[in-house]
Structure formats: structure tokens, C-alpha cells
Length: 351
Length: 183
Image 1 (cartoon, rainbow over the protein chains, first blue to last red):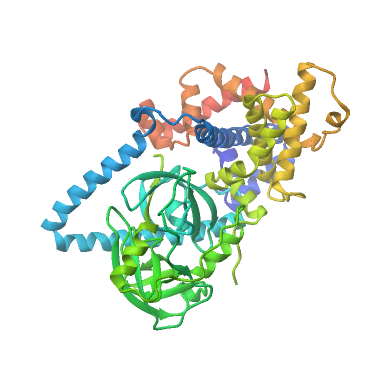
Image 2 (image 1 turned 90 degrees about the vertical axis):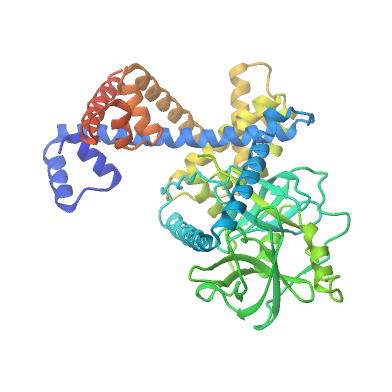
């Protein structure tokens, strides 16, 4: 092994015990070598730190660009330069939808298999993010993995003026997030607060004039936990359509006994993450977050208690509605009332 | 039990790992007040944002040490460091005699001096990397700055395998070391 190889291994902590011992002996007996070796390590450290700093400064410049864009009062920017990203997302969604429709008609059986895989992938990413959290605590030097893909999830309004909630894993690592409203328009949204452990994120539409609807939120957020057997329905918005599903609470605690989750018996698919889970009375008890990769009817939901907790940390307080206006309505009417407050969350990541 | 992830220490841990979300949250929460202060004290918006960005880098540097614990709030720290940086910039420009309250903004002198030394050190490293010549310059940049694997580099530079590329990398490191320490 030459000195650089040793220094590299030492620097990354990959020397085995025999190599380590040999190195220590040589350092102790040969001061000239010790000084030289020190210089090698120092240079490697400098290179690593230089790279880290560069990366951090790139992030800062990126954020700054986004901020100054927001500050400008002129909004009549040519479509080609400013909205190309939105347009690209919209166009690709259109293409994907068209293609997948043909594909679905032709290969309805195969699709089930591929959806199953996608789910699995999502589950893995949740597990990874949990692992990542643990490793951040243990070792602050682990660098975040770079993912190069676009994802989509669902969301539900917390306040009429553009606040909405989704899962943290939906927006994690995003360079930019766009919210697709029920009317089909895209809005840039910013992350306001997140809770990685409970997998909740609160976002707000950047446009200050934005409102989900002319009326106020018709539903409430359940302050406590609901009982086993409570009938629930979900309204997910993975692509261009709102999708309705119904089921019931099957256990009061979620994944590995997490008390801030529910286990539901309700169908779920990729893109359902963040979809509201609503009771017959029109109270939101939580949001869909993941499902069992072997049974798409076993769906995990994050309870509304976790959403309440996160709203408390917001710089500007928002009050979640505690009474519902949907009690006496038929299911069709309830859906019609909730629909304008659902949204699709499009996440864009640089490759 | 419930534990909010967003304590300041957790935000700083995420910042230390260059987590974009955490960085953006801190940026959004604290930049406005700092920029407003600098503009009020004779800076323009660009100066102000430059200063705030520098303060963010200093916070990032501090967060790199595993034992680091901030003794005050993130906002307080960023504000104090920004004020100090702005004060230094004024002094360098010597555009006017400073008021009393200005000269007192000397908080976190050590952090700022450490930062300046580090920036100088990085500049020297960059200069050494510039002087080293091809193919070393591109090779070292690809491996250390762009995080490319030795396989990718071998393919890019036309080496027959990763080991050959590695040998070349070590030769380049030797040259870099000479340039860097003997300058």
C-alpha cells in the first residue's frame, strides 16, 4: 500500500486493525514519516471540506435565487423562461396519463404487478428515511443521498389561504414543489414546517392571493384518536382525478405500535400519500402515509394529532377547524364539498 | 411519545449534513430581519444578502463539529454574526466614522476570524488546483468536487480500469501536495 492509499483509508476509517497497528508503529518510530503522513491527511481533509462548502454555497445561491424571484413585483414573465418547469411537468403528466391509459387497457393484469412493486419502493423509502434519521443522530457527517426523480402525492387544505398538509416523505429532498389544485392549475408551494419522525409536512402556496375556495373549510380535524371500527373514506389525488375509497379503522395504533398512526382497512396506491382520511361525520382523522407491501388493503395513516402538533410550531398560527359542516349531508354531497380543498403535490428533484 | 423534529438542535444537525429543507427553513425564517437591518444601516439589498449568506456559511462551519451546541437561538446567532460582518465591511471601506453602538458589534470574533482563515485556505487550495494542469485538474475535481466514482473517471479519461485511474490520482495528489505546501 502506498502512502496515499493508507492516508485515504485512514481518512475514511477503512483501515483494518493490523494495518492500523502497523501505521501507529511507524508513526511513533519515524517522525519524518509522521509529519509527511499528517500533511497527506490534512490535504485530503481540505479537499473534502472544500467540496462540502461548495455544495452548501450552491444550496444557498439556489435558495437566494428563489427568494429574489419571489420579491419581484413584476409577474408578467414570458411563459418560456419562467413557467417551463410547470409546463414541462404538466406536459409530462399529460403524456404519462395518455400512455398509461392505453397501457392499462392493454395490460390490466401486468399493471397490478407493477403497482405492487412501486408500493414496495415507497415502503423502502420510508424505511430508509427512518434509518437516515437514526444515522443523522449518531453521525453528523453522513451526506444525504441524491435522488433524481419526480414524485407525486396528495394533500388536503389546513386553511383556505393556501396552507396544506402532506407526508414528509413526499416532499423530502425536493428542489421545488408544485401544488395542483382541483381546477387543474399549478401553484408553486413552499415547505413551512416538517416533522420527519411522524412523516408530516406543512406547505403553503407562494401566491398570496390564492384561496382553495370561496367558502371556508367544511370539514374538521379530529383533536383526539377515533375508535376501532369507525368507518372512514379517503379522497386521494395522485394525478388528475380525485379518487374515492372507503374502509374502516382496523387498529388504533400504526406501524410497529406507533400511537400517532392508525392502521386502516382501505385500498391505497402510490400517490395516495397525504390523502385525507375522513369519518362519516366529516371529520379528518389523519392522512394516508404508507401501506403494507404485501396487502394493499392494510393502509397506514398518520393521525390528526401529529398535524395539530406540527401546526403549533408554525411562525404564523393557523387554527384548524374543530366543527364540521358535513354531518347531515349525503356522501356524494360531502365529497363535492371536500373536493375543492384536496390537491395533488408534484415534487421536482434535480438529477 | 410525540417529539417534534424541529428543535433548533435538530435543524442544525440537518444543516450540518447540507439538508436543503433545513437550510431553506433557516434562510426563510431569518434572512428578512437581517437584510432589513443592514439596509437600514446603509447597505444595499445585494450587500445585505451577501452578508447574510456569509453568516449562514459560518453557522454551517460551526455545525460541522460534532460537539457543537449553540448557546443561543439560531436567529440571534445569525443576526449577531451578520452585524459583525457588516461592521467589518464598513471599517474596510472606511466610508464614514462609525457610531458607538456600531463598534460594539464584535460578537463571535473567533468564529469570524476562523471563517476568514478557512476561506483563505480554500482559496489557496483552489489556486493549487488551478495551477496543477491537465489531466490532474479535471481528474481531481471530478473525484473530490463532483463525487464521481473511480470507474466513471477511468471511463471519462480513457484509462483501462479503475486501478490505473487510481494510480494517476495518487500522482496528481503528489503534485497537488507540492503546489499546496511549498507555495
